[in-house]
Amino acid sequence: MQAEVQFLGKFSHPNLVKLVGYCWEDREFLLVYEYMQKGSLENHLFKKGAEPLSWSTRIKIAIGAAQGLAFLHTTEKTVIYRDFKSANILLDGDFNAKLSDFGLAKLGPVNGQSHVSTGVVGTYGYAAPEYIATGHLYVRSDVYGFGVVLLEMITGLRVLDTNRPSSQHNLVDWARPSLPDRRKLRKIIDPRLENDYPPKGATKVAELILSCLEADPKNRPSMEEVLVSLQEIGSIKTKPKEPKVHATQPRGAHRDRHYQSAHHSPLHAKHGEGGRANQLSPMKSY
Image (cartoon, rainbow, N blue to C red; front, side):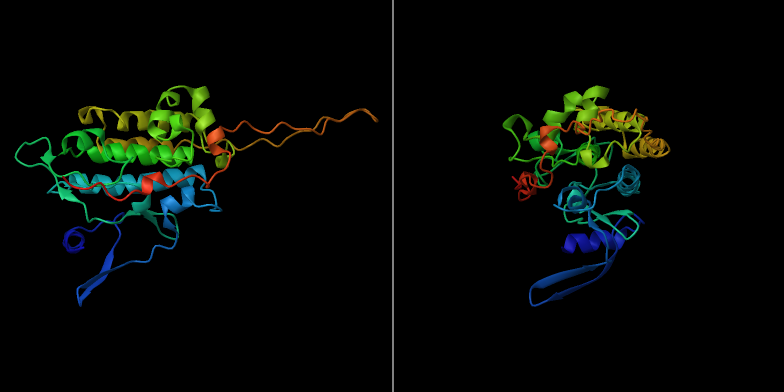
């Protein structure tokens, strides 16, 4: 917590949560933050009974989070957030996103170094593969986590969920093959959007996710580039739905009142009842 106080004392940005004050008494250390009326992105995506977020709101949240992360990456002393996940994205009354929980934030590489070496901490599912495997932390290791959260946002599914079939426990592994294919992509989009989103925008988000999830951090975009892409996606508007026109039928004609329900992926059958595998304790340092 002391590290978080020091961090927030140095940096201020509209997309970083504000520290109002702190208290350290009798070995108890308390932090007081600004009140974020809408809670966490995690709750809006996964909490049972939560009101669905519209496409435009999801993109707005993604843009705000990207602005916060881009700020950290481009300060005079580069900061690697190291724990980017939906639980750490808080929302104010207007769904403006702010990053929170900077206890794991770390200064980036200096003197021309490409990475910093450190013990592995963070949250399974969001941590970049190169960081887990080697302890080498790159600025663009954060970009991987951003791609994971974007994937959660368009599918409405947790990155890790042991209540799904075994081949689908890991959202990234399961969804990645569907992202380049428009037909397959439609099947994994959050059904709570009820097809009320621009197909071109969804395709662009899928392309952005794939670039963020590149195995080699050098091949991932910078957060500034991610932000530009998201702002362009945000300008793609959803076409208003045309009112349904019911053809008149001759008197006495049979009317088929049986309607086929829209196709839903089995993964979305019981939304909000999945396991919470991605809520594992932070990875231990070693």
